[in-house]
Length: 508
Image: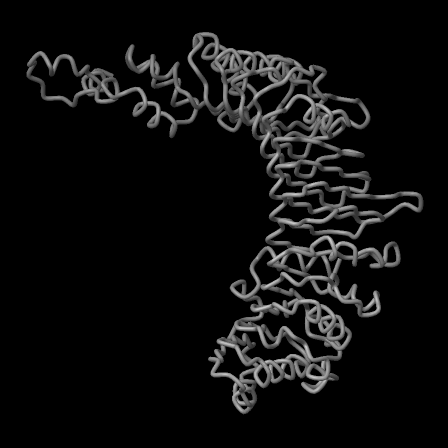
């Protein structure tokens, strides 16, 4: 202990010319912002220990702007009680020093009511200290039985009125009670994960969160969610296999980014699902999941990029209204589609989609099969200004080998696609099974794309013979043809996220 005290001596003794053979306590003499940056790397227990080293270290400890308390620092129930007591004492002695970030990562054990009460006290103190970011990650076995006992997490009302709070993140498997207060706040970022929301939450966001810019809802349980905001810029909704959700409504003049991943296993006979979007200035749209009974998207006149992966589940839905989705994308420049979404054009009798502004198309498919080729022709016919085309396949999921050999290059040429004269960059990833359709499409591009600059062909190790075949094709341009070998599960070709998405969309 004496050696530790020597190593942490104050710098004032050195300033007075005191001769010493020990190290100066540099932390105590560091600027507050530097000391607080160093303390940000300590867990809560080490932060408490530091406070007992010296008076200045105690000051730094009690004024640390970032606090993370976690039950993982306690191994058993007794240690957890000791940790609770330590946090109580720390928060009480902290005073009113500002808290920028307060994280509570807690797994409740016995005595959940007492622990929740103490935790709410910490939150009250954090609000008093003008907290800017409040993050709660709460879990307990009791919380998983809320459907029978009605357990509800109700945050202190002052949290929703806190003027300093800018970001609120909550992850908990319980019912999150909607705030009853309607006064405005300065919240800019809200993220809810795994919660069961009361229906009034959307109304509270619409009426009270006048500064909200980013709203993220991940795996929340709610029957209906609608929000209207004049400040919201980004909206994300991810709900995997939630059979309860029936309606999503999102409206905002400043919305530039929307991400929706909404999937469900089954549909009751009387269940109707709908999506309403009003975002005239939207620039980025990502929609993955099931096609719904009704989807009203309006016209996205400023849309730059759209990522649409829609599917139907058996005979529950068809694609009769999916063509309206494509019409909503009439001004998009970059379009990414799944195989099933593209096949809607077959159901619509090869109606042309009005997609004149598209310059970049990426299609993520299993294989260029005979039933997909007509849909692809219809799609390309509506894109006269297309300059970049990527066809990406996912061969490792291709259990069967559907027919893919019925369309020659003459078939493509007979449709007189205007886009072939604009194409400059083409990439094609060959799948397993029959690849004749893909090779004939390659032949068509090389023989007719007069402005083509580069074509990249990804092939499997067993398909090296395609190099010789393609090199024999005539070229109307001076394009460079590049061959790249890939493995069966090559993430560099498709990307890990697309692997997971295609897995869900095609084989569940």
